[in-house]
Image (tube, rainbow, N blue to C red; front, side, top):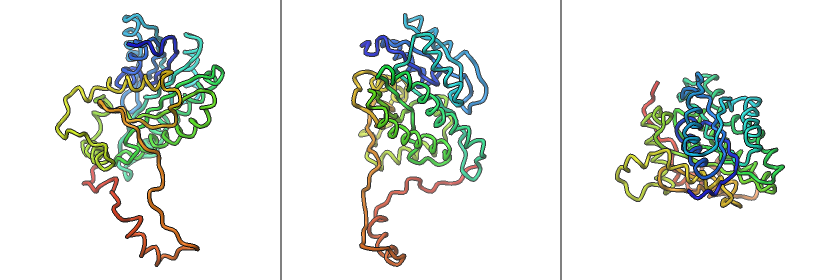
Length: 312
């Protein structure tokens, strides 16, 4: 390890398992003092347990690192404040926030309940606000901070994940907005599209996985080697060094961006921008749009969500 975050104080949400665990371990091994936050619930957010966070803290300490556990939920503003206060009480402040915490409640929109919609947004999107809002005053006072929010390629459109996609793509807009606000305070804010074989991804239907690969191919991000990658390609630890880089001083000036960290690649996603436009001097008529849209804006469009058999 390079000790590039030596002495920095980091909070990692959802750090008891999966990608969050790997990020917490890497930060600690690289010299950071880490608050390992995990509610210890199931993939759908139900239940709680102190065991996952405690095990990661024990592992960090066994390797000579510094860490404390937090079991508070990111989904509520006051409990998120408790997570931040844990960092302040244990280590004196907070320099780095990584927010991988999340749940899944996959459902087709015609079957989704209001509760399933609300719960997913509460943890992912509200959780991002709750954590950021509570850490920012400390970072602004020190005129230093690194925030990495965990979005998802599902935000590009994944059937059966309307709630998850909305939360994750909302996080991208949130990232870009607050990056502009916080850059004068030397606080860099970026989002990542992570990936890996975790208990969460194990619940995702194969149809959704196939769709994501089709989307990557459509935007030119398909693997150069079409053969099946080896198992280690799906190791969630592959995300950790890239996230830690974005959490370090080396990432100064990199802000408001979206990076893909899945597998062995590190990809930069382009921001939304106009790619085609039609114009006239005056108001459009529907007849004019009928004539021009199919041969201009509608020409060559790729359906982001191909038709697939419905599932219950």
